[in-house]
Length: 232
Image (tube, rainbow, N blue to C red; front, side, top):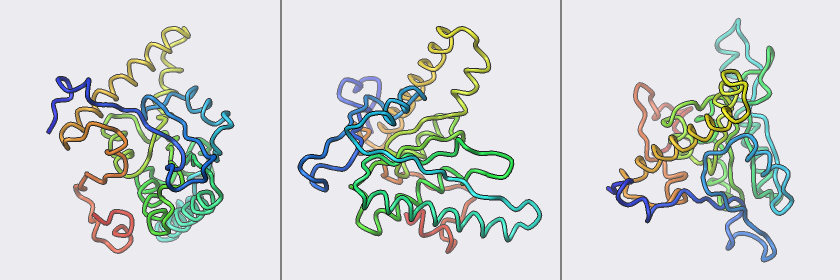
């Protein structure tokens, strides 16, 4: 284990987004970000840049509130559909794939974020595409450092916590106060993430991402429908 406070000078949260150099055409590029914790403005900058091809995919499904079995089937079908879209994007040299639940509404519910990123990660691994693209999660389902740590740990290269941004917009009217609150949250989560990395003896976020270090409590990951997404 590493002491994230004493060893902070030797640790980094820097992440390269896009296809890994050995798995991409010679002319391809990567985006370097200083932290995997993104504010909405930072995510929008990634969307608008033109150096690395980017696509946003909705991770939503149409819920059935009257029939639990049909609701489960709808969720499973949507999960598989998004995984296939991720595969197509990766095969099409899309370096950054953003999975988003921002468009939820009365008729659209979000696929569980941890399940979605784990499924997409395993699907890409299965088809030999994992190093072709980076996954970014734009989700309202991550509010705590643990949420962020697990989503990154199961395959996301970066995360934009929408619920935190929306809460800050609601609580603060002054732009300066809003920016300070978002900055404080970002720095707090970064310190927590480095502490988690240190427990595993890891000094870079790149080596932590997708490592699947977590084990579930009160969830049977040996269950056939979950084992494919949480194999370890």
